[in-house]
Length: 343
Image 1 (tube, helix red, strand yellow):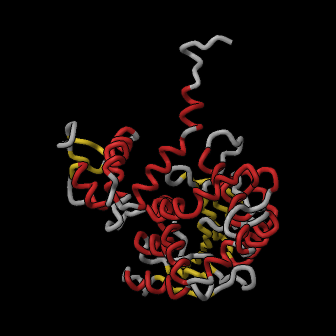
Image 2 (cartoon, rainbow, N blue to C red):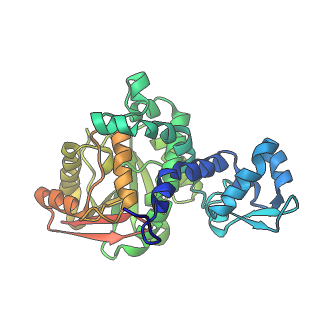
Image 3 (tube, rainbow, N blue to C red):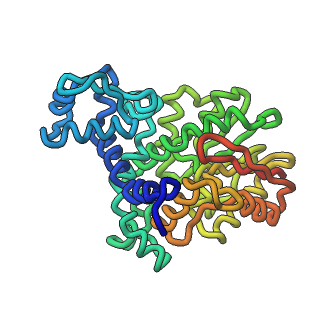
């Protein structure tokens, strides 16, 4: 086959070497480059000193970030000044309230090296994370060390913030008086709902080691009157009754048996006329479009083995089986959606 202008290997090469761009961005987050630029543009020499870069690396590193649209540059040569893009200035300034870099920090520290074993995961179906070295599952490792657990929770906050805010804005809360967030971590979803809908009383529930973290976040936000924190093991404990029960990035952590068990418990606890909502990177039913959702499912393979992400059709079948009357999918931010089951 002869290569033509219409058929070239450019896309293959760009994707195959995509880890180059990814690691450049992850290292920039690790070095807090975007935070260093939060107060205004700096020259390459100034950034070299501030970040502790070697002279050989400075301009290749910074100009790569310009080329992949993660930085902007005013001018050329040694006197040129680098600055954040609107996106990196908003979302990757660690001192700002909209920082989402926690998930990138975790990706750099953990996931990047684990994904090098994807081929082994594809052949064995087994996780490729810490369990290979310690014999302990991810959550067992995380929950054993409070500081590491809170770092993980903050990482999840970053990746979920936009989705939770969109849900609070788009979902019809007209009939919702009580809300329960199962596996609520820092309480971010409950707080997003409380800010947008002051008449809704929310409870964020998670394991006992997590509750103090959530309590601290809720108090700091000044939302203690609207948001309660509760200790709960969602495998062992029954769910408290509520008009709305949510799970943000929870169902995809588990195998099919546990997914169905959690849905049954939610059905039992939701008040008549209420709803159960799973906020996830819901894969399109034909499994052709949501690349992030599909790769998140591969990430679940690497982290847990049998855990997986799912389509809206999958969710609908599980919820109808549990007794829910109807299901709809509400698009949120980026690749994320709210899968909604009505009782």
